[in-house]
Image 1: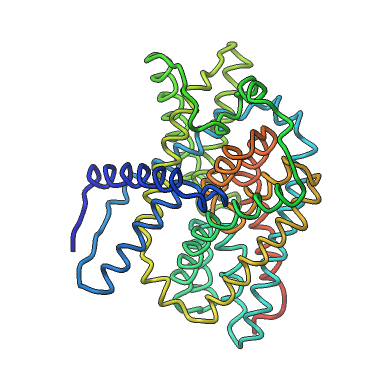
Image 2: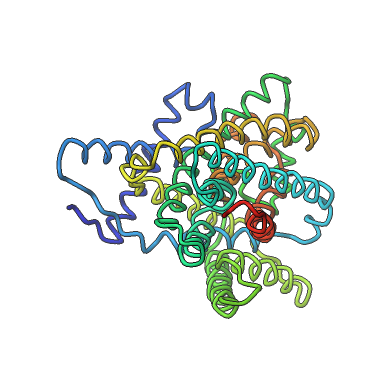
Length: 403
């Protein structure tokens, strides 16, 4: 067993990102299908470690202590960049996208339960392989897995949920780019925004992760302070809600505090957050989190998933791609912005918000900017979906099919 400490893991993640960038830059296939750089590098390392374990007893264990803070930092920057006036201007699009997302949650659960019933499995396993672990991610999967194990007697429910969420994280990073690329080419779509338009609309600054940003040490320190406040207050807020009817994941609370902090300071004292510094820290934390999460994947655990569960997940991936192409894209306007929204929907519909952002960055880097997508997707995928998913899950649990 080779164990890497926190600094060595950070070095490894940095090298993984450089590897992913090099591979994408030199591969026509990866560029054509807009596969995100952290996904390419991280998944390749995970595959190499899986091969190493298959031919020998050697294993590499990474320190995961930075993954949580990096993920929370990413969500804090989303909240700090969320200008309520901009969100209000995009209210109709946001509402429409939320309706589309709700439709997917219902469809995922119908598919999961139906397939479980057809294969003679407990319908609860079908729910775990549906919106709980796919749209919900690791946190929601772990929480509901514990409930299913304790209240419904489903053995290994937590393990199944975590494995499904991990599998979904991989698929979310692989499906979104090809779906958007297909739509752009099939309908000959083009971005309606110029590069200058994208520069002017810097409020949602995850759109240009490779842009050179001019910042000062003072602005950088101010951004760090705002992120630290969002993390600390959001964590306390989440702890206070634990065990109540209003319980929310920590990252949702951190994002909410970031929104209140940035807009509150602007309204009360006229303080304008320096978006460039927030952008820099947000994109760094996003890339490092994805690299660490993917390179740390224990692919041998996924390989041990029972064939029926793998079949459910495979069908869910195909259904996600079809839903994004035929529902998300069409309902959201059948234009270029809708194609980018479809890529983001694949990212968090199967994986998580960081995957959605990475998908959209890869697509817009190749085909052009889409401010609407970067305005809508982070708020829906990081905030509204958890509330909506909880209601949908409880609705399906109320169905008389679990006896």
